[in-house]
Length: 268
Image (cartoon, rainbow, N blue to C red; front, side):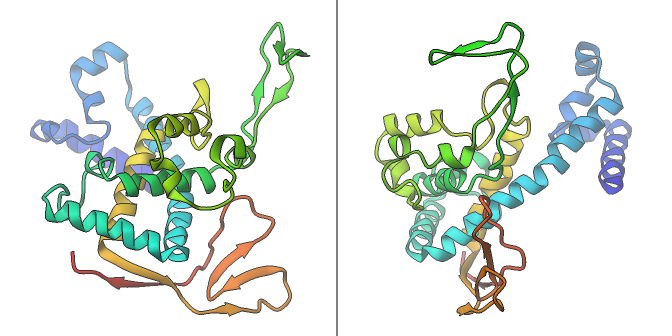
């Protein structure tokens, strides 16, 4: 945390001392301009708090998404090959920047985006129940009265596996479900809780999406990947270990501590 604060302070000081760098659009640069300060009364401490929210708070969430995304590619090599073909064609047609694609460019790759959405659905970074407190006056819901002060919540893990919304194969990783129709994709997104829901949705959502899209695309563009090793015995501890692939049956969130992956560079 101290390093993040120091990095932020150094960049803020550089922006203040070198006005010519103000044309370089960092995430918070616009908020340091005089007109923004006058309009929003933003202090350096306010910016520091936002900086920590949008960086430190997203680190675990983004990592918790990229790990299952890579694992899904490894466990479904046909999906990985299709994603790579789509990326290769887009690059050959000049539709992907190099060395790093832009966020907007990643959203124009239908199958890649289907894999992003399917990983969010099946392996959402936050699977915990997101509690809400019933406000003053209570709430009538489906014929039942819920008194004020009651804590309620919903499980993303359960909702994302609702067969009425996501299909009979809701427990299966199948990106194609997001390509079947615009109406069905809209319905599935409506019930998606990968960023929370409603007014308390994740404030770092947009920043996290930029990281997730760009990193996952570059991993698929630059590397072939496979799991290291075959199924192994863990000594009777109750965990499933495939090579160095760690899973635990009790975890709702996919955990891959110490996972062994072999990356092979692709021509790109």
